[in-house]
Image 1 (cartoon, rainbow, N blue to C red):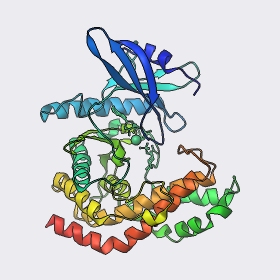
Image 2 (image 1 turned 45 degrees about the horizontal axis):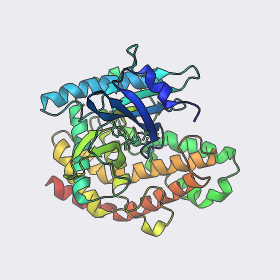
Image 3 (image 1 turned 30 degrees about the vertical axis):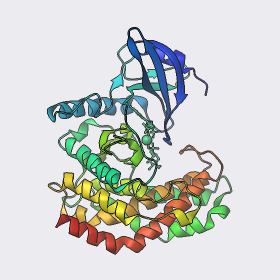
Image 4 (image 1 turned 90 degrees about the horizontal axis):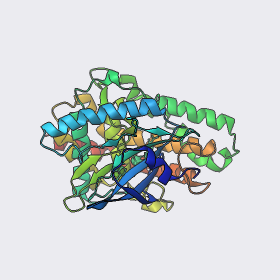
Length: 366
Ligand code: ADP
Ligand code: GN1
Ligand code: MG
């Protein structure tokens, strides 16, 4: 890995003596470790150490955003009677007071308090979990509703600009730098037939119909730490992409992941389908938090947002496959293509169920 975690942590203001570290979690972007420390007269403790993916993020801008957002959330959480050290991330500073440490080779690391006694789910779980996930992401948006968005950097430009994502796909097909397009012909055709989806939300973003809000933008189920017994959301994590965006992005992305009856990279496509039960549960939880602020237009597009976000990630996986796997972590050469096939199977299933989903949203809104 080219760096030594026991050396890295010496630069942070951590109470205790380093014992060991292990790779942790299933994220596609950063390198995450659980790092264990022993302490005098106190039980041992672990922290989350992450190597920030600086291919994707500018570390200064990224950490500027996360400091502001977590400081803001801590005040909100305290005012709501919650625990500011459990219900949002806590950054441990370096010995010279910075929010991250940069090695002489340019690798950047940050340390968070480890939030104990929680679990994350990697795929559709139970209706209770999904309803609580919907509540947690809905509540997160509510907490940030009056956060001044102009203070945030757009850390990844055009992150959910599906039109731009589609143009990137077209360029990668044209270039075919890895000579992989032949092996993805069916998926390319699938994507090309659906270009009309790309404009739907972005063309209205910023209007009264689809207002710009401060959103999470990466609302996978494994970005919420949940209570293993009650299933309640404890802490929304992975704040790297908190930026101005649409409520629809967060809603659609959560369902893309949480209502898939299979893992995101399941290769047996017969297992991949969109669970109406999970969608209903998530929608119920989400609407219970945002019903006062959601616009008619947003509400009407909730079902479609599940198609759009699934399609968008599908074309991102496909583009990354065609470009030689430079963005998402992969474990084998076909991994991104398999993920794209999986997401496209899900798109088809959501297309089929769209009317049913619209009825569900109408009924839940009463
Ligand atoms: P990535 O951006 O690569 O997805 P995440 O920030 O989501 O990285 O972290 C990866 C995984 O590490 C999470 O899914 C979660 O299981 C775990 N994790 C991250 N931060 C914490 C934390 N503060 N406490 C406990 N677990 C955490
Ligand atoms: C990445 O960081 P992680 O694994 O939670 C990606 C998301 C994708 C997701 C697909 C910054 O999320 O946009 O939807 O993979 N995050 C970034 O699983 O690109
Ligand atoms: Mg994550």
